[in-house]
Image (cartoon, rainbow, N blue to C red):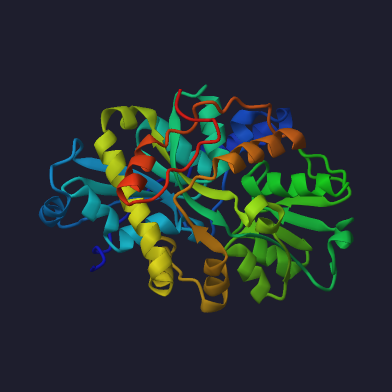
Length: 386
């Protein structure tokens, strides 16, 4: 299948409100509204584009015309968002959508994507677990639903081997995470607490200093010696390894079955209600893309890197791309039980009041798509549509 033509882009102004909110939280205390977020690696700015595809050919492939002329999707230019990167590059989503055009918007962080979903700027998005939890709880369960899974894994604790040779050496060291309260920040705080280390969640001060550092800055911080390591997603972890760091812990090793959600698919509840046929088509595209990735790993990896180059301006070098891609598992199951666990970890760390996640999932259409493919249904851990 030939890739779609490269879309043209229009820059979207970075979300200044996110910066003001983060500062306000640091000064005034921690709330569920502002603390949960997700970071990407290497993208230059939020931007949007129209995917120009052969609509008539797509309509012939998909059969009947769908109920919306356009579907607006959001994602990060990041390997953990490989499903949209590959599926759009290969034209898989457009084939399933037929005459319904895909309009894309690339984000740098989860809060901006949630705001875009709430404002109707996007209809469907690929996003990390923490901003999905935050968006759902902030709206009191009215804004979004998680409708499918996308990726697991791809997070590591990497350290300077001259300063840290074992997990016992972490005391007194400075370990970076992408952002206060983001998915990796919660994971590190939870891990340190389990090892008996005392850390103030708000400031990051304690037996281990948790230093909140943007992923794009982390490699330079490591080179300068201002941090001794980092608990970060791919490809930042593999980038640090090319600078001499070593992997001290792969986060998948602390999870049952070595699986935990890193990327989910969310949808506006309004769009889901008004255009379930379009949502189903996107989910078919996601399931078929994940199958394509598993069957054609090298081609999919090249597709993802080409998409990152288009969106972020720079492709990843093989020394970073290869180990990073190998550590991510693309799957349809949203791993709902691990979402609840991640929320519980944030509560334990003092970053989040206990959230009510009842109704955060609606896997009805995903399980319909999976059944049509002869696959088993996936569970929602009791957090399904109410």
